[in-house]
Image 1 (cartoon, one colour):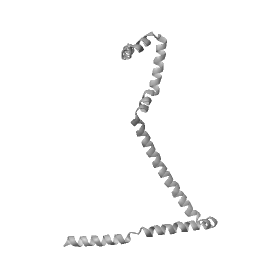
Image 2 (cartoon, helix red, strand yellow; image 1 turned 90 degrees about the vertical axis):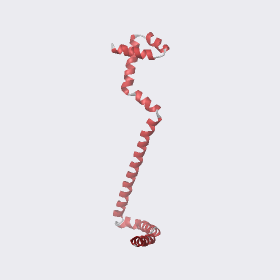
Image 3 (cartoon, rainbow, N blue to C red; image 1 turned 60 degrees about the vertical axis):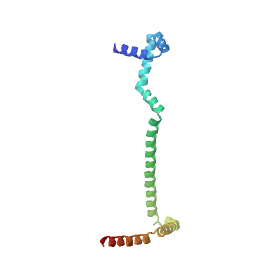
Image 4 (cartoon, rainbow, N blue to C red; image 1 turned 120 degrees about the vertical axis):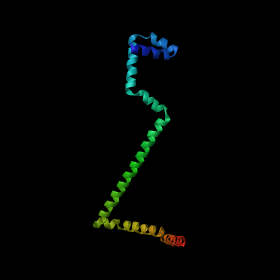
Length: 141
């Protein structure tokens, strides 16, 4: 009884062409259509169509997924590079492999030394320290 009332309300919402088409179909066809409709609702096809038609509903989850993939790639690459570096430090002590990698190790060490020397901020910190001492002395007076 309630289903019939609900069906009649749904039919009233349709356009007149659809109403006449629905009323002309046989009971068996109407039951088949209802079965297909129930199957579509059970699969969640309506929600999927709403998802596809709304750009923000598509963009936000994909953005979050992209951020997660990027973060995962960063962490994974860091771990792999760390393991490779650690394993190379173990291999360097081996006679044959260590001799072949020794020039590269020296090159990396010299480049690192050059970098630390060029980015030495010690004079700047000394000047800052003197300035802070001067400010402290002025505030005490």
